[in-house]
Image (cartoon, rainbow, N blue to C red; front, side, top):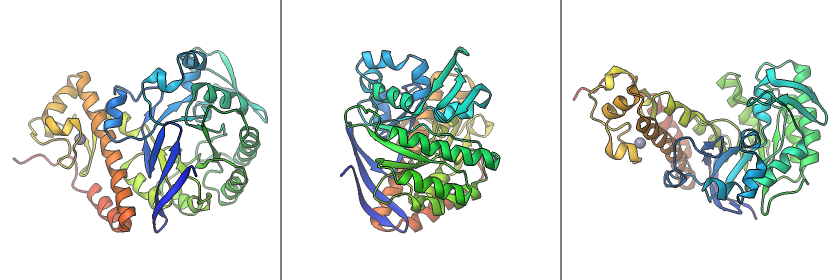
Length: 375
Ligand SMILES: [Zn+2]
């Protein structure tokens, strides 16, 4: 058994997904290491923050340095120094989110221009499966057609059709040793198309199932309404992955709807813009209110930034563009979402997830960030 559910609480579940490079405790937040690195952090730091699994990006690694280089150096684990589980996306999201670079989409694949040098490139279902085999990730994602919110109905329908066609071609594609493969459903928030897509993908023997094409510009209410019914429709005995959510409120909401895994660049990207995720909401450290604030970023956090440094010091580093500021905020923000996810898991195991979520959402909506320190 690759995936074991250990507890359920309402629709929320906790479990363990076994991979060739270790276990992933779920619900699991997956820090994003786009180019084979969680930006600015050492793999040991990422592990110490509580991450079980990191995500890497097939699109970027294919173009730089190329899967041949990675394979020659022993695969992505050896190459990047992260020996835990790695999930690779298929590259489809990058191709379809850079719509201006797409030259042709047909039943066989998609032709586009590389963002690196403008050269023409082509991704096919078998091709991206092969790249992921050579990268040697523990979980490979299917190539799918992901459209932005508000795409015309005819386009959406075609995206669902092609996504199924491609999934059928990837399900038995060669894999790295022990590599799992997840199928992805599309269909935006359209009930009929999403249902069709889930049912078609779920009929194939994948190791896990994802909701793709959400959190791509639709309203939060539309997105959550969709996950409410689409999450539980995914096969219950397999891990369920919501692609692209990582804000604290969003994590709580999708976990409540039966999602087991999620990823997002938000914690690290937010760090690079000088903001901290905290139990008081988001703090913009550029705000002069923190100039002499002696408190840690979050008094309830045990990360390397909060253990030793004040908001005033982090603000000083951020405003002076010191690299340490970016690193401390990255460490803190990742720790914050990983800790939130761990607390959610513990609450599910205790059968108190619903009250935990309500209290957490109330705290996160707390006092405005501009409130200065009065001490
Ligand atoms: Zn912290």
